[in-house]
Length: 319
Ligand code: 0CM
Ligand code: SF4
Image (tube, rainbow, N blue to C red; front, side):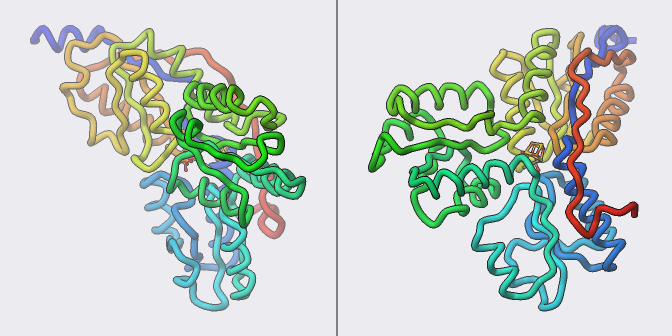
């Protein structure tokens, strides 16, 4: 047995708690599965239902067709809006085309949409903190025709020139880095002391809890592996949380992407999963680490989540 083998046999996997699916992702997947059962395939889904390649492929096999533009949905068909939400224009287009719609927008994204609508109705300009081009940002920005200002970082705060500093508010994307958002919000408040903030932060419970779990886990690890797809905002943020603490960290979509070099000579290997990454993938990553010689697994303590969101009308009965 080589020195490396001996080390890996003594090494352990630390498992973050909580990790993986949130209530919004559970609900969104369930909506697609129930719609297929109810109406038969194909069922059209606007954008990836959640940002996970494995989930999308699984639903594709079950009869879902993923599209980006509503014009790709043939007349008379059913379309499901993804967990990330849609703009008012997309909703109107679906209505005017007479499509049957099931809305899998996470209720915590809808909460932000409602904030935007209320504050625009009160005459406020709204600053949104988010990542340009992300579908959730497009959906939330698209809740109002005008008066929306997207910023991504502190430099953007300095560049903002708003018409009435007494009538402005901010909202955020739900899956931001909690720490980066806090810095941007502090800069906003310093520049616009009267800015109105959400009653409860827009960053969702799942994002907050998974980042907190990595903050607890990372200092105990020599390397961190995050299960998540490259386009998943919340999964990327988990990798960054570990990286910012000086721990080498990698994101993988599947166990085959693990490079054995990452764990060579490491004693503690942290594993977590983004809110859209199935537990089956996290378990497959653990199995791969076992194959590579790591024997022990220790689940860390952390918050037990027991949140569930109701299904939309028409899909709520037992399947
Ligand atoms: O927003 P993000 O890119 O993190 O989306 P996701 O599909 O990976 O996670 C669930 C959600 C939402 C909204
Ligand atoms: Fe909803 Fe948060 Fe999950 Fe996104 S990550 S689906 S906002 S609970």
